[in-house]
Length: 323
Image (cartoon, rainbow, N blue to C red; front, side, top):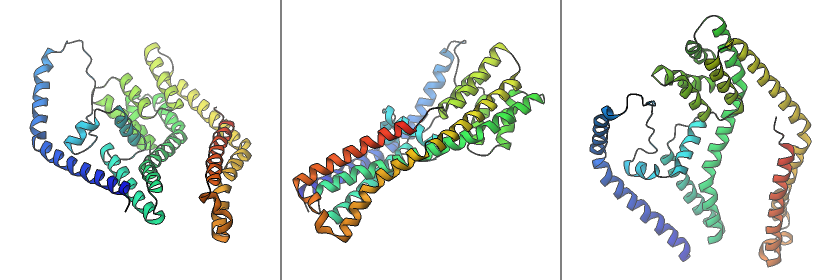
C-alpha cells in the first residue's frame, strides 16, 4: 500500500479517536454547563430594558454530541448547511450530515483505490464522495422549492377566501395548514405557531422569507406587511397576487417550450463524450488507451473537460431566462 494512502488512513483514525475522547470528556459536564447557562440567563432577565423586544428563539442543535456542537457553532458555513437541510425538508442535523459526507468520502476512496490502484484517483474519489451528499441535499431543496411554488397560489387563494369570509389573518393562516398539502402546509404551520407563541407577525413573516427565499414569498410578505401598516382590502390584494404568480408560471412554461432544443443540445453535448469513451474502452481499448497513457492524451483530456465545462455554463446561461 502506498505511503500516501497509509498516511490518509492514519490521519482519519487519529482524528476520529481524538474526537471520540474529547466528546466523552465534554459530555460529562455538558448538562451541568447547560443548567448554569440557563440560570445565568434567568438572573440577567430582569436587567433587560422594558422596551427591549424579545424574539422567540428556537435552539437548534447542530449535533447531539456537545463537543461537536460547540465546535460547529463557531462556523457560519456549518450554520448555512443546517439552514439548507431545513429548507430541503431533511431532519438530519449538520453534524450528522458532515459525518455522512466523511463516511461517503472514505468509502469512495477505498473503492476507487481498490479498482484503480492509484493514489491520485483515490484523492479525487475522496473529494467526490464528500461533496455527493451536499449535492443530494441541494437537489432535495430545489425540488421542495419547486413544489412550494406550485402550491403557493392555492394557499394564497385559501387565505383570501378566509379573509373575505370574515376570519382574522392569523386564523386564516391556521386554515391553510389544514387545506393545503406539504411543503406549504408545514411552512405556514410554523408561521402560525411563531406568531401564536408571542412573536410579532412581521418577524414571523420575515422568518418565512428566510426559510423560503423565493420571489413569490417575498411578494406575499411585502404585500401583507404593507396592508397591515397602511390598510386596504387584503382579500383583493391576495387575489391579484395569486393571479400574477399564476401568469408568471404560464410564461415560465412557455419559456421551457421555447428552450427545449437548447436543453436537448446541452444534454447531448455533455453526455456524448463520456459515452463514446466508455464504448471505445469496451470495443477497442487499444485505440482509446493512448488518451490516458500518453502525455499528449492527458493534455487533450484536460482541454476537452475544460471546454465541456465552459460549453455547459454558456448553454445554461442561454436557456435560463428569468421571468
